[in-house]
Length: 390
Ligand SMILES: NC(=O)c1ccc[n+]([C@@H]2O[C@H](COP(=O)([O-])OP(=O)(O)OC[C@H]3O[C@@H](n4cnc5c(N)ncnc54)[C@H](O)[C@@H]3O)[C@@H](O)[C@H]2O)c1
Image 1 (cartoon, protein in one colour):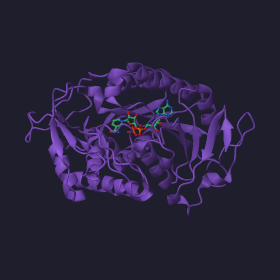
Image 2 (spheres, protein in one colour):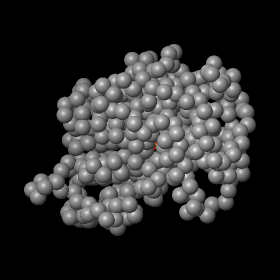
Image 3 (tube, helix red, strand yellow):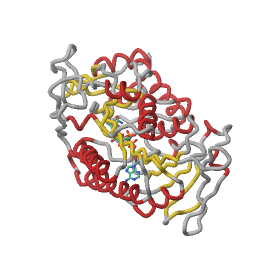
Image 4 (cartoon, helix red, strand yellow):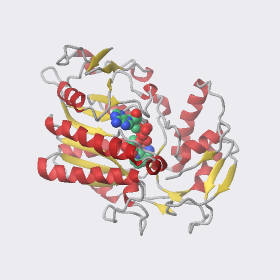
């Protein structure tokens, strides 16, 4: 293990890619301080390929992104401060820098050492309720830290930036499905923080020529259990993992917040998209930018919504286990229906969320939960599941 500006730099070792000779094992650049970094890849004998920096690559969506990049043979480097990420989600052989994106000097070093020309930026605080309780975290961790990262990127000649945005930028939309022309009126600091960065990206693209895609995800779900990757948040606020934890007996029951919404079964409807489909969309967005595609915002959802009751029923079917539910109060700021129009991403990228049927999502997530449960010696939790299905 080496250090760079006092931060840890390691090449990770996880099982699924052991058989593969990753190209960056062949080259070992050195930091200005003389410390060896893990090797970066070569494409062909003469020239190093430009690499992609994935921030938040030890998190849920970021780790699946890294996996897809590795499978596509793209050189990739991960930066994560592990505030909400996990070492076990790091993909084998991928250089990992344990650092905060707000640390401009380290980010500049990583970008220059690694010939980074593109950043896929997942690192963020992601909990809506926390953002209301403690907005400072979101203004400093999501806004100020990302502005620092953008400074480092501009100073080091990064040309392309793919940003994890969110449906939360729309707030409580007037119509569904939601297209990108819908008004953006976030109703919490989390959504505000993401919209603020989208606005900064638009200004920076105009002024400095950096090109970007702001990808507004609806509800990411699913897993790649065979690769050992899945959804792991503490606290968990997403409906599907909460329901599956109840199926595992880790939670006594699932709370349904409101059954009198103007929807067919009275529960809220959301648009679930498989995490591997999200990763495909990022690859397509990056390729599009590299081929001269215009900057802009793109919804990533399926165009089909599923109610909370439907999700619970599908989880019962897939797991074959009973899942107890109780009714809770409707929560302020929970729109009845949030469904994307993904037409812009379809047209521009040719993107199809082909793994995103609810059944497939739940099956893949369940496979991962079962593997984790088999490994884990955790005591079952008895607390109630508070399904914050945002
Ligand atoms: N999960 C969803 O359904 C969803 C929906 C819309 C948008 N998003 C966005 O997608 C991105 C990824 O979400 P996720 O669910 O994978 O979250 P996650 O918490 O699993 O991953 C975020 C990762 O970023 C790291 N991180 C946070 N702040 C950092 C910092 N300052 N420096 C370095 N690393 C830092 C964390 O340690 C973690 O590994 C986030 O930007 C989130 O806002 C997620």
